Image 1 (tube, rainbow, N blue to C red):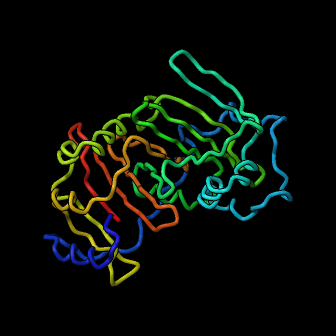
Image 2: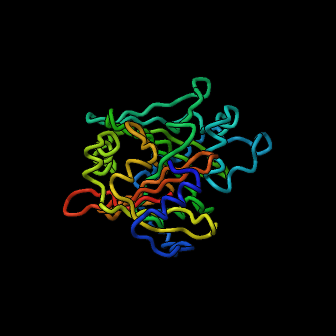
Length: 288
C-alpha cells in the first residue's frame, strides 16, 4: 500500500492525466435500505426468557455502545467484555442442502472468538460509496458480521443486536456462499485476487486513481494509473477469506460493488470499485 505521502505526491506528478482536487463527500442516501438486509432480525433471533442479559452495573465497559465500531473492536480484543456481551444460551444455526439444524452454545462452553480474519484490517462490501456513511450511524440497531471462506464456499454470520442499549451477540449462523447476494461477485473476486493474469485482464486501462492531497487534509487529488503502475504500487489484497460488516447496506444494483479494506487502529484505507460491463466485472477505481 502507498503509505508515504511524499511518494504519493511524486506518483501523482507522474500521472498523465490529473484533475483538480475534490473535497467533501456526496450527500448520504436515505437509510431506509437497511430494512432489506439479508440477515436482518427475524423471529429466529428473538430473545428468549432464559437468555442472560448483563446488568449495567456489572459491566466493565459502559462507553462502547454508541457506535458499533467502538463496540466490536473492544469485543474482539477483550475476553471479559466478550463473555459479557454474548446472549447465552447462544443460538447456533447450521444451514445445509439437507435442511437446517439448531443448537445452543452454553456460557461454560464459550471460547474467545476473534471474528475478523486479520488483526490489522477488515473488509466491507458496499453497493456504492454513499452507503459507507452507515458505518458512522448511531441509529443502527442490527449488524451482521460475515466471515466469508471462498475456499470452502461458506459464510459464518455473527448476528448482533442492540438490547436495552447494549450491543449483544445474539446468534451465529453457518450457510452456503451461494445464499449470499454477493455470491457472483465473490467468485469473480477470488480469481481476481489470486490470479495476476485474471487481475490484469479485469483492470480498466487507465484506472481511476484518487489519493490524499499532501497540501490539503480536506481534499483529494485524482488522476489515472496504467495497468503496470497498478501492479507496481497496489496494496495487498485479501485472498481466500474475507469479512463483510452488514450495517444495513443492500445490494440492489447487481452491476457495482465497492470493496473497502479498512485498518484496525492503523489508519489504513483502500477503496476498490468494480463495475460489471457487458457481463464482465471490471476494476475501475482505486482510492487510498
